[in-house]
Image (cartoon, rainbow, N blue to C red):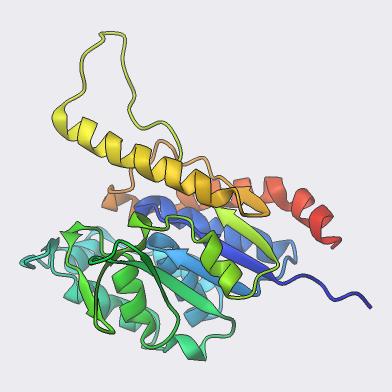
Amino acid sequence: MKQRKKIGLALGSGGAKGLSHIGVIKALEESNIPIDMIAGASAGALVGGAYLALGSIQKLEKYVTSLTYKDLAWIFLDLGSSSGIIKGDKIEQYLKELCSDKVIESLSIPFAAIATEVSTGKAVALRRGSLASAIRASGSVPALIGSVYLDGKHLVDGGASCPVPVPIVKDLGADYVIAVNLDIYPFFQSDSSGRTPTVPVMGRTALEMLRFNLANLLCRDADLTIIPDVSHTSSFNLAKFVHGEEIIQKGYDAAMAMIPKIKEDLSL
């Protein structure tokens, strides 16, 4: 009997857009597509790691959609780090509670959270130790959330070096890689007045362009890429974490549209 290919998920970074990963995993499970390993960057690490820690995508969806503005205020209004506006201590405390303070080695399948080493700019795959600490490091948006010192390295957001961790999930042993790319257009919406965008808008747009091109380059090596329609959701709109059902649905719809292709590729 022919052995089936090992299927790996590469969950991309994207802040609030990352809620769409919940919908993607939900669609794969409903369609009986096995998931053998997961690598995630930033929001992808959060969803992938929490999913494995909780053991149920339905539990994670219920948890996320029950978040309140009061919860977000407690998590993010933790100011005063020298390397970011938000210290991140409460973020890690929240993650430990969410993930039951599990270690990565105890998860049911191989998992890696992707961070970026500040001194080299290279991607670092966190595959051992505290799951909460790994997710915290992977989501440390430079200048916004304080960096993490872990295993002798200063680490920031994995999206800075590997926004869609296709090569990492291959290193975990995947034969067939499903990438989920959240870095998509539009970056800047012009209007008929022809007004020049402001300096902050241009700065953010330039960074988004860099991430867009890097993400698409990484996805070339995936066997299949799912692209949820989240282009009009800001990565930094934390309010989207409250009542995130619409974003979750975007991921579900995008994944369901690709299920026939996945089953054809894998002869499932």
